[in-house]
Length: 255
Ligand code: GRF
Image (cartoon, rainbow, N blue to C red; front, side, top):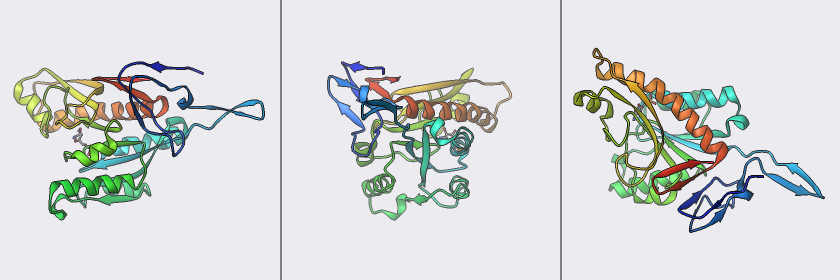
């Protein structure tokens, strides 16, 4: 069984049972007993324990094609082999195709609208509570067009990822595709990263590159980025779920 002794930074792994903590702050942590699949000693025999599929809550605001890519990959690969399952889908608005996709897949959904709360902090706490109800191991912002606040990050920091349609740190914010085009960049792409308290500033997990063509407009370029983005997100989420990971400063190490 591989043993990793981490001496710096923060160790983050998924729980293999309900009472294992998600993350460990400190100088040293031994992840051997969190490896998946685990082996369990029973009556003198070593038996392989079933890998535990990680629980994903996905947040959306729009068409939900990234959500669909995750749903399709999990269905095709199987929950166990992929390493994760989507347990709920949340949104900041109703009537979107992203929610319809979740409903067609038979998943529970919830909507948390900013305007229904007196203050942004209240919305943030309500969103955190709604997500927490599904006990996720990982929360995925897949085209979720809201910046979360302190309460959400206090609960899900280190296990909240976002996909952004540009090569961060270039072109953060709501118009990453438009801004890359306007700047005259020759390549752009997508970035899957952990969310911190800045706008698209958290540690980068993976990136995909897309060439910008002379004839591109925002919509054509975004469509080509999304093709790469969907594959990247499916790959990253699966690897995080199956292997576990740690975040060392700005560096993400998938084990
Ligand atoms: C993605 O390009 C995402 O990076 C951006 O919005 C798009 C969402 O697409 N924030 P979809 O809703 O998954 O189709």
